[in-house]
Amino acid sequence: MAEYPNRRDVVRALLEDRGDLLVIAGLGASAWDITAIGDHPRNLPLWGGMGGAAMMGLGLALAQPSAKVLVITGDGEMLMALGAMATIAVKKPANLSVVVLDNEHYSETGNQETATRHGVDLAAMARGAGLASARTLTTLEQVPALRAEIHAGTGTVFAVTKIAPGNLPLVLPPRDGAILQARFREALLGPAAHHQL
Image 1 (cartoon, rainbow, N blue to C red):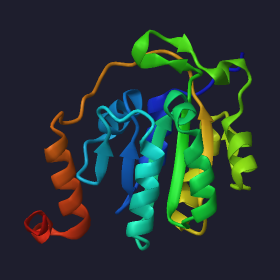
Image 2: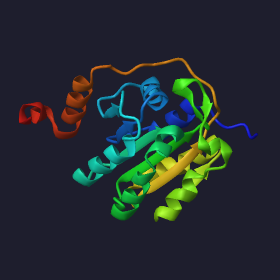
Image 3: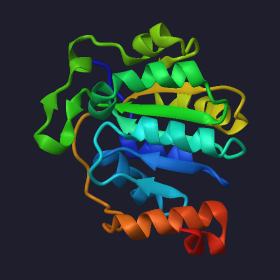
């Protein structure tokens, strides 16, 4: 098996000089990864919504067409949300990017193998849904070009990044969903946002 990059190195490279990028992180390790790089008010880590990250990112991208939206999620979560690929492909928001960190395991529940470990190709599935440029990255050196494409915002991006298996130390974001939602909303819409609820 090839030696794939460390997940945190990949996420660090994706979030370097992030600017106003809005980041939705899937359940578990993806949320810990974005927090390890630096907790940020424009981060929305999901604590308990497995399978929802890509669709939340789609909704945000459609609602905020001038904002660049990056979803960082895992292979287990993306496998749970395969229908999201079809909806994203139909809508094709130019400001949405989905990056799947694929370690071929369900890290949060005991490292059981996912279907990607047995040949399921998420990038091929995304291409089949209509995301023609979907691809798989296998090295850290490929990430800066992906990052540039994300920041260009010229078309929907779907990329699978193979990463090394294994669990890293937890770096937990705030646990209170109301706080996470309120700070994200304020970062996006300004200080008066919490009064508009």
